[in-house]
Image 1 (cartoon, rainbow, N blue to C red):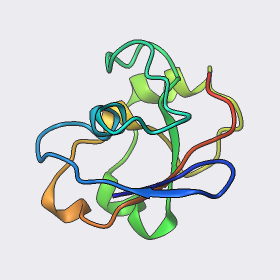
Image 2 (cartoon, rainbow, N blue to C red; image 1 turned 90 degrees about the vertical axis):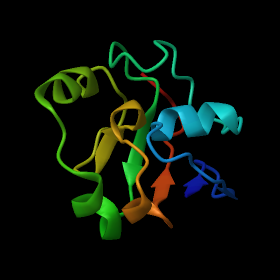
Image 3 (tube, helix red, strand yellow; image 1 turned 90 degrees about the horizontal axis):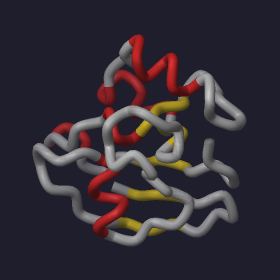
Image 4 (spheres, rainbow, N blue to C red; image 1 turned 45 degrees about the vertical axis):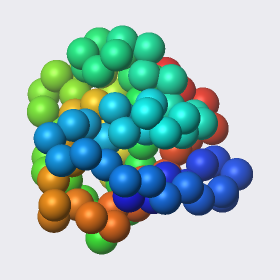
Length: 103
């Protein structure tokens, strides 16, 4: 998967199937992913923008995720909390962008 930070720098990393995108980001020191709650969907500090081509494959937001996104900055239609996206083979090549500020 590729993370593109708010300045446009791209970093491509390998994700472990069954882990979350947030865990992958933390293991690979992806800037702008704070993940303060450690993946419990209790903050909005792993906010990402899912590239439009990947929205369907990453699935819909849960109600809990929707509620937490209320605390995120600059939420858009393609906003997700990456702690809620599970790495699976179908997501190979996933492109995510990070906002300049986390919730």
